[in-house]
Every structure is written in structure tokens, then in C-alpha cells.
Length: 377
Ligand SMILES: CC/C=C\C/C=C\C/C=C\C/C=C\C/C=C\C/C=C\CCC(=O)SCCNC(=O)CCNC(=O)[C@H](O)C(C)(C)COP(=O)(O)OP(=O)(O)OC[C@H]1O[C@@H](n2cnc3c(N)ncnc32)[C@H](O)[C@@H]1OP(=O)(O)O
Ligand SMILES: CCCCCCCCCCCCCCCCCC(=O)OC[C@@H](O)COP(=O)(O)O
Image 1 (cartoon, helix red, strand yellow):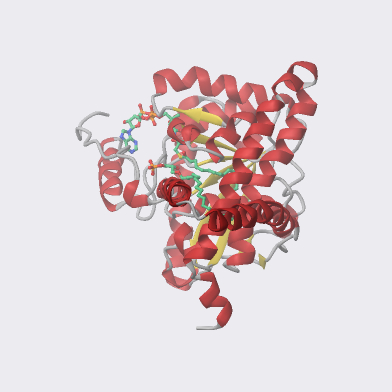
Image 2 (cartoon, rainbow, N blue to C red):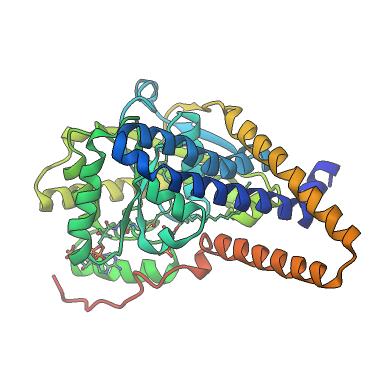
């Protein structure tokens, strides 16, 4: 193991990165709160300010992936579509099988200049996660309770608000609704069978209502659907803890651009269209599993320095008060003060560990594990 790799695996380094992420994140959350009056004066300006503030948070995690772990990202797509990425609003449909798939998504957003404005249909529980979840309120992220009776109205309303969004955005939709596990796969295939749909080998049966409501409400706002399939080389199952430890992965993303007008407006036809899309996705996945690549040409969009510059800015800003605090602490010699500091640090460390836990599949929700009667079609 080289010196750099040894350094990257050190707990103290992780502690420092988490300290910078947490403290800068809370400062940014506070700044976002201060923009509230601005929304009343100029909504578009408030949005643009929040896009930049949000970037300061999410780009730190992108920096960890791109610059700390050195993870590489290859894009498989046709060159004509490539020209449009980052220049139009699009709905991204992505498979949901990896703990860091959201982070790879963010990395592609960063490389095409849409990281601050990127959107997702996220489960409501994530809105309570400090820093990221709180940031999302100000970025107009669309939350769902995964209860259609409630979501059909709230999701449509939130999507309608995006019609005059001032900067290009990608709206990410994990149509599977939850991350892939063997149990969830088995149950969703029972549902497929009961609906007379072909079985999928690598995906859960997609939930069609969220896709339909998104397409319908973003017509005229978004111009395309980016059908995206993500995989990692060498059958790796990457984790956020691996990234923090400086482990390098290689992500391969296959993207097909589908003009939005090709998607049927009728709900049932739209659902059938999505099921067909997932059957195609399954064949791409099969191709990747067998050959280690996707069909078509590859391109590696270059990483940009901004995420690193942003991280260096916040870490130099926050290093000084940390050193000051530590020296004062040691020179004070007060056992009580030292004890209080140790307790506070442990609490912060546990807090970050809980946040990382939100990305772990083993600690995932039970959504999609409820057995469904086979004859409900
Ligand atoms: C060039 C580069 C291109 C791309 C780069 C890639 C990406 C970058 C893009 C953007 C990045 C932006 C942000 C990323 C940052 C962070 C993201 C982090 C995480 C957030 C992700 C999540 O939180 S995922 C969870 C939430 N999202 C969803 O659930 C979306 C999908 N769900 C739906 O659409 C649902 O329909 C719903 C939520 C709207 C409503 O759910 P509900 O459960 O109430 O209703 P359903 O219709 O789904 O369920 C009833 C029907 O389902 C059938 N059923 C029952 N059991 C199952 C089962 N196990 N599997 C499948 N189907 C089942 C049931 O029979 C009902 O059937 P019907 O016939 O009546 O429909
Ligand atoms: C410099 C960087 C330092 C990093 C420090 C570590 C900070 C930790 C931050 C944690 C951020 C949490 C973001 C949550 C995003 C989780 C995305 C996700 O994948 O959610 C799962 C849902 O889709 C489905 O849920 P399940 O039904 O599978 O359950």
C-alpha cells in the first residue's frame, strides 16, 4: 500500500472530511434559510442563489468520489445526444441497485454543469436527513410518501412548479422505487406474473404511476427522457464508506436519449411503454454482465476542478477554527471541557455514521417486501 492510499484509509482523515461536510453543510443550510425573504422579492434570483449554495454541499461528495477515491466514469452514448446533455431539461430513468448510484448520478451532473439544479423524486424520509435533506427543500426537490393516494396530488403540484425553473435540470426517477434485493426482486416478479408481464432478471418491476405523473407534468418543460443504466466494473459493489477509504471504482453508464413526445400520454399506454423500457434495460444489463461493456461508442466527460476547489475552500476556512479550538482545549487542561468536547465529537461522528447508513442497502426500507396475492390482475 502506497503512502497516499495509507493516508486515505486513516480515521483522522475521515473525521476531518466529515467535520468539513457537516459544519459547512449546516452553515449553507443556514444561508439557505436566510434566502427565504428573497423568494418573496424575486423567486428566480432566490432559485439561482440556492442552486449555487446547494452546489457547495453536493459537490463535496462529488469531490470525494472524483478526487479522493479517483473513481472513473465512462459514458456509453451516441455523439449526437451527447451534444445536448446539460443544455436541456430531461427526465433521467436509472436502475437502482448500488449504494452510490445517486453519487455517480451527481458526478455526471457535475460534468455536464447541472449539479446545483439537479432534481429527484425522493422518498419523504430523506427530507429529514440533516444537510442534504434540508438543502433539498430549497432546491425544490419532489418528495413522495410512496402512497399514491397522497402522492398523486403533491407530486404533480411540485412538478408543475418547475415549469419556469431558470436553469437546465435533470429530474432523476428511480422507477423501481427501492433498491434491488433478492427478496424484493422475488416479490416484484410475483407481481409481474400476476399482471401477465415478462419477468425481469436484473431489475425490480418498475412502478409506473410516478413515471406517468412526471412525464405528464413535465411536458413542455423537459424535452427528453434519458434512459440510463449504471454498472461497475469487475462486479464491484461500491459503498460510500469505500469512497471515504479512498477505494477507486470504475463506473460505466449507458444512456439513450428518447424525445419526450415519443412517450404516450394515456396512463395505461405510458405504463406499458415503461414496462417495455425495463425489458430493454434488462437486455443491456445482460449484455454488460456477459461482456463487461455496453453496445455503442464510449466517451469520458472530463472531470472539472470546481468540486475540488469548493472542498479546498471550505476545508481551509474551517481548519483554522478547528486548530484554534484544539489548542485552547489542550492548554486549558480542564478535564470537563475535554470530556464535553469528546462527547460532542462522538455525537457528530455517530450522526455522520447514521447519515452514511441512509445509503446502505442492508439498512434500507421494507418497501416492496409485502407479499401480493398472485391472482390480482
Ligand atoms: C448523461 C447522463 C445521464 C444521466 C445521469 C444520471 C443521473 C443523474 C440525474 C440526476 C441526479 C439528481 C439527484 C440525485 C441525488 C440523490 C438521489 C437520492 C435518492 C432518492 C431516491 C429515492 O428516494 S427512490 C424512492 C422514491 N422514489 C420512487 O419511489 C419513484 C418510483 N415510484 C413511483 O413512481 C410510485 O408509483 C409512487 C411513489 C409515485 C407511488 O407509490 P405507491 O407504492 O403508492 O404506488 P404504486 O403505483 O407504485 O404501487 C401500486 C401498484 O404497484 C403494484 N405493486 C405492488 N407491489 C409491487 C412490487 N413489489 N413491485 C412492483 N409493483 C408492485 C401494485 O399491484 C399496484 O399496481 P397498479 O397496477 O395498480 O399500478
Ligand atoms: C467530503 C465528503 C464527506 C462525506 C461525509 C459523509 C456524509 C454522508 C452523507 C449522506 C448523504 C445521504 C444522502 C442520501 C441519499 C440516499 C440515496 C438513496 O439511495 O436512497 C434510497 C432510496 O432511493 C430508496 O430507499 P430504499 O427503499 O431502498 O431504502
